[in-house]
Image 1: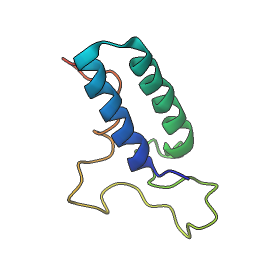
Image 2: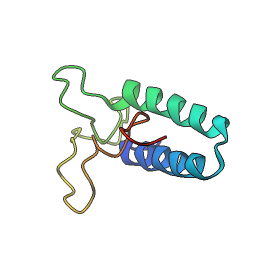
Image 3: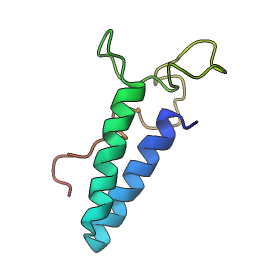
Image 4: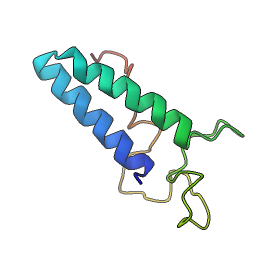
Length: 87
């Protein structure tokens, strides 16, 4: 099972490659991944961002949200298909 960071970084990579070769299949893949990420990780109770793990992951005792890992950019900034001035 992937974590939210895994989705976010793959989406970023797909967008970066798309900006180089303009292969729309990569853009569509990134959009699909973003929708899946929203379904699996978005905090629908408080709309407060993304959880780091899926709700159905039996190995996770408690789900955390971004902010627990200061060296990484905030998770709500990493994903994003429609970034202003990009794509």
